[in-house]
Length: 389
Image (cartoon, rainbow, N blue to C red; front, top):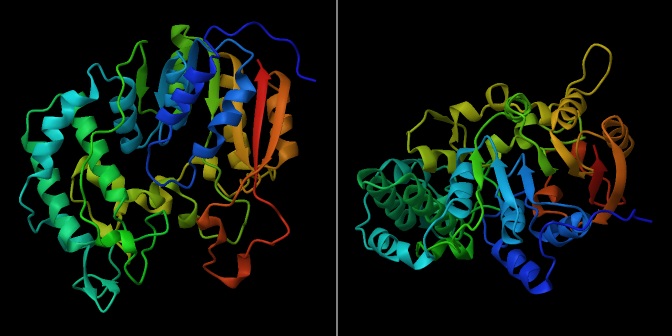
């Protein structure tokens, strides 16, 4: 039975919660998305104070928005440029959403141009096949990449504030996500055009709200940021940790589990830096495995046989300056359930452990070789662990 804990510092009014869940729903297709786990996440922490919350690996920022929506002051962090962009747009906004409509209308009105994105990611319809002019599979149809080229150039040309820029880029990424030609990631593209790829890319103002609390947005290495917090005496009521999992399948190619690889295109849209690209998917050069590797996705072990990914998680849990810590993890990740319990027990008292059968993302059903097809009798399970540090 769950222990009786202090009354939370935010309201648990069901209308407020429902509204926060709806606000957190908007976002891109994402392999690590917590969209379907938002309610269980709230359920796990509803009895503890959450006035200040750290979302250390914020990704699409859905969990950051959930807590901001129920009244918490949120610090959102992620190494990805696109995550920082989303967090800035949602958590730091100071105007009504309608104030940005003229900017979005202007971007939608631009004349398409044939630019860098079209040359590298735009394809033609050849009897239903999705191909670029060089014969490789394409990410978007040319009419949408030409619009992308025009919009992305205009965003750089306009004198936008950092907030306006983030909102424009968030709108652009969402619009592109609605017309892409993939199964949800950007390591490979479909051979034939998806029905949505024929649609006209149209930007919309994101579902923005005026922030009524002071929120913070960071783009830092997790351990570096935690060291900074500890040195400055910063402390949180709750820290939510959803680190990249990697895969527990040793035969899985590393490039198939790197989030920097999965979503390389969004970094390019944010930076508009025309990077060196490689491979059939035209990935960024800096998304190669040896460059973009995360310690939490690490598949190797040290000389003593200990998992490097588990050791990285252990360090972060130890360093996190919070009264309570909620860890989200999957049974498909590097660490086992027993190992996770041991790591958490070393840093505090385990209050709640929730195990949920979770419908597999379509990516989990994919196979690149016949050597590592996941056994059908092992369900996809999501874990939530709550500890008092």
